[in-house]
Structures are given as structure tokens and as C-alpha cells.
Image (cartoon, rainbow, N blue to C red; front, side):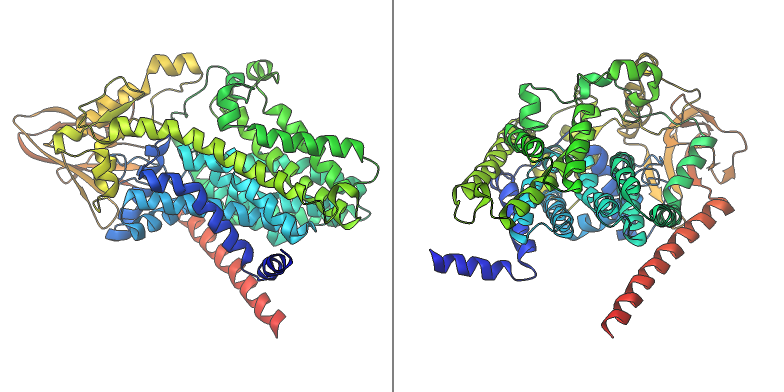
Length: 593
């Protein structure tokens, strides 16, 4: 037994040991998916698959278009990735090309998200003086938490933000421990979040505010902490100009349709029902949370200020994420939260990071001070942690079972248009294919053109549509089907992508008539009909182009025009990243000399 213990301790001393352990645990998580050869589909899966497919085809063809979606979403030319995690979209597209099939892509991306979550949580613990063994255990628990696993089971993109968020929380704990922050550390962590998932960066910013306040109150040199935080904020602005400037500019020059506004915010908080305890906040996680909270109360006078602050802040955001928090009252005062925040349960990511970090710090403190509960010979504590990890994995597998069953229902059938199934439409019968064939096919376009979901988010509309009732009355999902999906399913429309980023639709008309084509027109989209630039462009209520076609062959081409300021901001962003990366590289070389 002692020999095995020595071997394990020697393994843990290796620099890459945490990475190897996290990779093994990640493979264990995706093992059921590998065994059943299942592609999990969530509510947003096809939305993200189309984003990644579009950038993959841009990289493959060399026909780049940062703004227009020329390949995904049935090639309608909409603006999306420029407003929604542009960097991660291109990284995902590159991974998709390397993988060569959707099944391999989902497995690889699942492993990447899980391992990154483990590494960032491990780094957060180690930097807060949690011993290596405990840091690894806490990181595994975080990897298996619902905040990360939600990408594996249902492709909820908040998991990408959750995987990176520990890097931002590190700046918060540094503000308390050192009364200072790393300027580049804070700037890079926030910039990565903004480039990946804007909502996660907003939640993260709210999460570190209480930590910064405690750090500021207890600091002797308060101006130093404030000054370095401001420096980090300025650098972040330059590193993320491509996101916030384009978002502000495009939103000001167009009326963009918001994402789905939920009718009641409180409905989307976590609760103590079957769905919540299997998908949002598992009993095994609740046990850990209760232990940490109870321990902090019991040892309040002895534990560190960081541990206290993390626990109190984590509990506070746990209450905020609860469905019984007064979200109804807040919704009346800030109705825009229904289509910006949407789901209060998103705040749960903060308690998961903070309370799990507090757990690691408690275990380290108790172990080092040789208290009875955490004495080295208390072997049963390892069994308890193993039980929690295995229990979380079991509940994750239970959640997967339902998705595997739903996948099996559509995997082998040749379905026709499924008009009333949550805005999903199938066109397998037309091509004699099915999901099972599409997920393994090297032809990546088969899946996204056979298995389609209406996604009207950020499409241009003619009037502002605010609130659940107005959104439902407008019925954008049905309009998306009729004006884009249905039109594209008609075989006489052919698409062509040009080297300059333009996108054309070509068709043959029997006679001269007004025709709606499945292309999107934004304020800065230039439209040409049969080689003639149109000064006045007619559009539908969801931005689809309407032209007067002639008898015979017709071609409509759209191209998004980037003005001088837009191009300048993009150049500044690229130069900012190059300067920061060069500085880090030179600093590392100088340090080693």
C-alpha cells in the first residue's frame, strides 16, 4: 500500500500530471457518448454548429467574410459571429476542419472544454495556496459540475465562459490577498471571456466586484489597486474593440431582433425539482456547498479573509440564481433582462467557482494545521470525495440517457419537414440521408443543410420588438422558415461565394416579377441585381431582399461594406494583441536570461 502511495506521489510531482489526470477524467465523461456513438443535440446546438461550419468553410476556401455568414445558416448572409464570440468561432471552425466529421468534432470539443475547465480551476486553486492534490480534486469536481457538463449534454455555450471564468476570479482573490492585481492577467482573462461569450464576461465582472471591494477596503495603498485595475480596463478595451465597437455600430445602424425574451425570469432560475437536481445543481454538489457554508460559520474567526469573502459572495449569487429571488419585481423595473440575461440560473457559475475554491482552501488549511477532521490518516475523506465525483458522473450519465433516447428517435428515420417541432425542420427525405449518416460524413454541409433550426436572432427588422408578447405576435421563427429556410429548400436557388466576401443567389425566372430571395440586407449591405447596384432595396419584415426579377437568369449579390472606422478598429485590435503577446514573450525571454 505504501509503495503504491509513493508511486502516486511521484506521479503527482510531474509537471504534466494535472493535465494527464484531467484528460483521463474528461475521457471518462465522454465515454458514454463514444460507446453509443451519439451526437447530442440541445436547443442551441444547430445555432453553434452553423457558426462553426461557416468559419470552417471560410478557412477551407480562403473566401473570408468576417461579417457575412456566407456558408452557415443555409447561406443567407446574416451577421452573427462578429457579434457573438468571433475568435472562438474561428477556432471552432479550424477544429471542425481537422476533425473532418461532426461526431469527432463534438467529442474533441467536449474534451477541450472539460480539460480547460480543469486546468483553469486548478490554476486558481494553486495560486491561492491550495496544495496540489486538493487542487486537482477540486478541479475534477468543477469539470463534472453542471456549469461545464451542460456543453457536453446540450451545447449550452455558457460552458465555454464557465471554463475560462476561474482566470478572472483569480484577479479577485489577488485583490484581497495582495491588495493588487496583475494588469495583464486581469486584462487577458476579461478579454478572453469577451471574445468567447459576452454574457459570461458580464457575470464575471459582477462576481469580482465584491472581491475588489473587500480588497480595496483592507488595502493600505488603495490607489495602487484602483490604478492597476484601470490600466487593465484600458488594455481590455483595445483587445476587444472588434466585439464592442461592431456591436455598438451595427446595433445603432440597424434594428436588430433580440434573442428570445423569456416571459418570466423566475421560471429560469434553479429550483429543487427533478430537472434542477439532475441538470443544474446536483445533490452531490449541494452536499459540498452545505459543508463549506457550515464549516465557514463554525470556524469564522480562524479562517482567512479570502475564504470568508468567497463563501459569502458565492452564497449571495446562489440566492440570486434561485427562482424565488424577487425576479418578478426586478423584471418590471428592468424588462430588458428578459432578452439579455434570460436565465438567472447563469449566476450559479460564480458559486461553483467560489465555494469550490473555498473548499480547497479549507482542506489545505485544516490539513496543514493537522486538525483531526483532515488528518493524513483519515482515509475515509478520500472515499467521500470519490463518492461525490462518482455521484456527479452518475447523474450526468442519467441526464445523457434522455438525450440518447431522443437522438435515437431521429437518427435513423428519413423525416420530411417537421413543421411544428420547436422550429426544427428536417429534409432528409429529399437527399435520402439521415442523422446517423450525416454526423459521420466527411461532407460537413450535409448535417447543417438536412437538420435545420430557425434562428432569427440579430436579424434586421423594421421596428423595435420588445417584450414577450410583441415577440410572439411577430413570430420570427415562423417568418425565418418562410423567408429563408423554405425559400432555400426550393432547388432553383443556387448560391455562390466570391473571393471578396460577396454572396450571390442565382435562379431562373419564367417571367419578370417581384421575387423575395433568401438573403439578408443590413444597413451597410450593398445589393446588386444582375450587375447593377440597387440604390433602393426592398426588404421583408425580417430583412430578406425583394427584387424585380427579369425573365430568364437572375443574380442577386450582397456584400457587407466596412467603413473606415470599422476597418481601423479591427486593425487596432489586431495590433493590440500582437503588442501584448510580444511583450509577454520578451518578458519571458528576459526573465530566463
